[in-house]
Amino acid sequence: MKEPFIWDHYSNQPHQLKDRVFKKRMRRHNLGSLIFTVLISLMMLPVSLLLMPFLRRREIDTSHFFGMSVNLDSEPDLTPQLIEELGVKSLLIRLPLWEMDRLDEYVDFIKQFKTKKLLINVMQDREHIEDAALFKEHISLIFERLAPFSKTFQIGTTINRAKWGFFSVNEYLNFYKIAYDVKKHHYPELKLIGPSVIDFEYHFTAHALFNLSSIRFDALSALLYVDRRGAPENTQMGFDLIRKINFLASMAVLSSKSSSILYLTETNWPLTRTAPYAPTSEFECIDEKEYADFMVRYYLLSFATQKVDAVFWHQLIAPGYGLIDNRDGIRKRSAFLAFKTMLTHLKDTRFINFFVSDNFYTLTCENHYGHFDVLWSPHHTKMIEHNYVKIVAQDGSKLQEREPISISSSVIYAYDNYKGNL
Image (cartoon, rainbow, N blue to C red; front, top):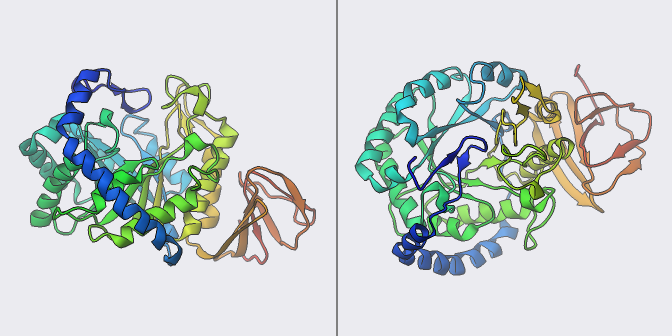
């Protein structure tokens, strides 16, 4: 990555672009694409909205739904052990194109997870966006070296933020097409996903999904952050997380450029008092209890839609936003145990029902332990009488079954019939 693009090693993202003259020049150069983005979104977003109520749930395979992002530069020797402890079966691994000189390191790191389902996130830089021959050479090498370990590659990321290198959707589509053509002619067994728009900015997604190019996405990917709105149940322009997901799913159904498979490949909340590691300002940061609560509920709400095939938390080890803080040794935050507990109950689970009543959320599922409800109330706490035979708190601790239970912002797993030994 070369100036004016500068990588921030604290937050693992590029710094904001400081060169305003350069930004304006690039925007002018891509004006035609930007106008098309506006026009196509005015046409297709209303149609997608109208389709939302008619979308049917799909049966989601929970064995690979709960994904986690891991990083070569964050405790690589300890990561495999921690992943096993957590119980995650699906991993996302970033591969920056500006670090092609470290490809052997990445291959060795990725080899450690050959029993997992891997998604390789190929991250762009401006050099590879502008030099088509260079990108073709490097993506061919990446496919050659990593195809034995992963069949799914996310091509590009965060395409609607200039600091990541793209200044228009057309630039991204041209970039993606190079990888798509290499895959089509030499690696037809691979799956390529995109366009990886960040946040609730679906006009960019609309442009990527409704265009005249010959490309196709084997799955639709999005970096669906909701952290600036607080809790995942909170709304933005009338859309909570579930409505945002349904909106996205309807676009995939309408488009001939994508399958209906939907991956949320990046999301998290920044943690308070962790600057400069937090990726946002202190204003958006939350404490570790809220972080654990919001994380679990984000997964539950996504699963409740039955339209998301995988959610990848960003990420396992990161002082400013991860399940583990490694600034002074390895410290597992409460979210680590909450994630582990969530997997214990929800992996290999069949969705039955989901409903919301008076700020009271109930997700009903069934697994080999029995039939159970996941209960929470985002903004209030209330006591309820019950007939559950086994109740487990968000952190995995057992609760007294015969007493009234408190429904709060931290979820509980409540079985009305139970067979097994948790």
